[in-house]
Image 1: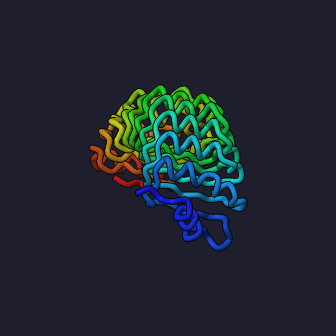
Image 2: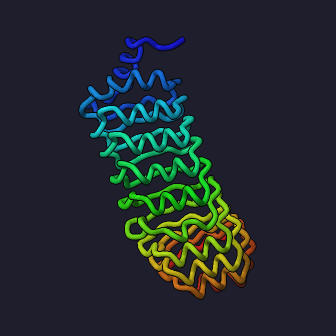
Image 3: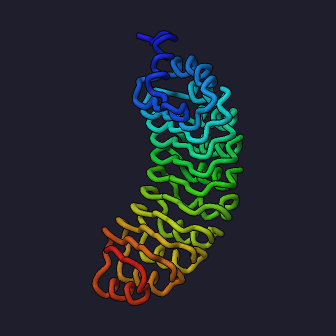
Length: 283
């Protein structure tokens, strides 16, 4: 049975923090109709900075409607675990959420068009974006990289279908510090290509579960990722030759290197630890 306006108002009151800055509506069974009726009520919460709507039943209409509300002061928005697709993602970007710094859209149904749409709208202030576990491929990743999210520092794209598209990173090259790409299809070409880009400020990179072999590992260490401090290459197909390539490359600032679940033997481990004496190596 649909909630009444009075019930929705009570839901807000019950889950709003004492200072009026945070509202947690996660897992409340909210659908698009509920959210569209909540938007005017949310607009009256003038001090609201943090909002979670995760794990509900919100789709495109709800997401787009939320963005049309008067929520310009909102800084953090969680929408993970809903049913938002391309239209909803684009709608979020075209709305009034100009103050957002942190946006979670993980575990939705966003594809290439939605990912690209996020980077063509009014979300230019974003610093942290989670798009993991969606349906984003090379075209969507390229759209993100070439859009207007020029202040982004942390990007989660794990669990998608991305290959080597991010070798063409342009707009993110100066600011991105953390990039999670685990569980995609990066492969050797993608890994080497990523290193040949201009992500010179990148400090944290996850490439676990990406079918990367010796050539890809060596390629990562021959490019422009000299600022890396933390690198996860676990659960790939890297052997001693790949370990040697990493040891002989230019990743001399690494502090943590995870190579668990690969095919590296004792010789490879010894070489890595000798070449990277200040780095903690996990195999």
